[in-house]
Length: 340
Ligand SMILES: O=C(O)CCC(=O)C(=O)O
Ligand SMILES: [Fe+2]
Image (cartoon, rainbow, N blue to C red; front, side):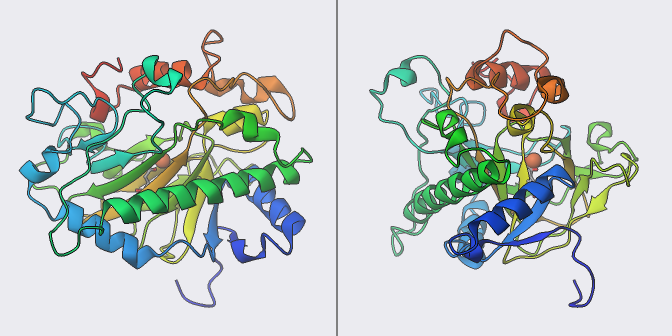
């Protein structure tokens, strides 16, 4: 991006969150009411090159090594119990072509909610190199804790910007089901499948979708390909806008849950990743509500405006709704697991 060209997304300076909280809150809400995406600059715990080193290390390992930490669809160990968190391999005929390693905050094994759902499951961490025993797990678990704190702070400012109590959304994230997703989109070696073609005929690496969560922060480094479809009366809904690389910024968007709970006032924007014939690595952090969070609550605006996201009124908790949503979308990485 040239220094004189207008950035394609609003840029929000997170370093002002302490000193100029209301101004940042208004910028966040303005971005989410219009395009639904923004760059978040100056998050001091975000060290993109340290993060990318860990992702490149993991993805450079042989397939058999990665599968040892796979979910049971991808893991040769018959005793593997993981269905949701862990490694998943790329599916060359699916609507997305990506491999990944997913993990989240770990609840104690004796937490009562652990007996009712698999979604909080613990992952098996990969074997570290003997000369750097704290390289991967320790760094990433710390990073996920820091991203959870940044997301909570941003959610507080969004509440403030909407004229609510800062802590209004805290009831949704007592035991968040948040997910850290380390992703690699490989270069395809076979034919491009029909399933991975966009609404405008473009070849895709990741299908067109909206996120399901509250808030997403993506590290995309220097890898191009992300596009968004703005819900803006000045732009035709069919137009795809390219998100320029800005490696030191996090890319923020919100998911269907927050859009619904703000009466559709904040936008869950459709996005996708083009297949440009090159590898892409990215790391989204999804801040998700607790399994038992009541997502039928509407905090601002008119309930009906956000209703397009929740078609089944009987699924009022995030856990049950997201299980139903995975099923309806037949997410390839979870296909055939006990989640269905
Ligand atoms: O790779 C990216 O930048 C986007 C990934 C994404 O949208 C997702 O996993 O939900
Ligand atoms: Fe997404």
